[in-house]
Image (cartoon, rainbow, N blue to C red; front, side):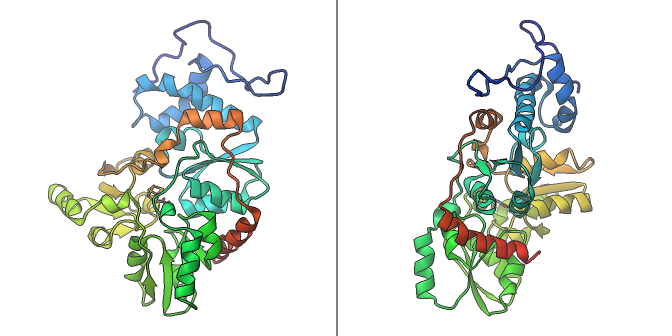
Length: 360
Ligand code: 13P
Ligand code: SF4
């Protein structure tokens, strides 16, 4: 497949350069025509996404990708993107991609003044908690998460009152208020190790009842739950996986641990989004099914030639609120800024840093 025409259908090719400042020092919206310069500058990106984005659609996307990549330099911004972002974002404009743990760690390392978080709100909040001096932007403030919405800080205080002495571990998919009330944070990459790090026989792992059950199945520690679930992963069923295996007996099935335990039991491997990607890159199975959000397979396919993907995906409506156009607006207008009450952030930071300092 080749890149579609490299000439703008209307007018003369425009000169591409940094977005101009008006006389008030405000950045002006860039010209979004598909010029030869834009085609040339974005050709290496198109190579990475051409398996999933048709050539005919590239002229509509490339100017925005190009403008974002120029603007982020002008703004001294870094784009942190979760593995569930669409391929135009993941391959086109992200500086760092990863799972929740990797993005949290990168937020502590970057020298940029501005972080544009392409993911959901709790991820942007985590970046702000770890880098309070930075401006953290999220392209759509409505990008939430069913897990984060299932519990409040007041719920955790009540849980602690009813269960004195039992450590409370919060999954990273929670608000800053919840993190501030918990002993330590964890992600799907390190939940088992965090649970075992206390050396006690009973802990709470909130709010994902399925992650907690999946971790509980791998340890002697009793893992107590909260009744939350990911609206994307809870929809997968073990029966669905068995049906796929009947049609594709050679398929390797890998699942996210937010799936119900009976789904994880049917899988050949379960792990965080980053661990799933590593598993495919290392094992290079001929056929693989990623039981998780839809964009994962799209993103990793160009990096794993020879691997065929069977795609029974469920879309995360919150992740999908983040689009190229909103990222561009975010950088142009420096919106929408994520703010965390400093007193809450200080307490939440302790929980997140405890996890990071475990180095697992
Ligand atoms: P990971 O930490 O595995 O990337 O998961 C985040 C998430 O929201 C999965 O639904
Ligand atoms: Fe939340 Fe599930 Fe979406 Fe992840 S996939 S952000 S856990 S709703």
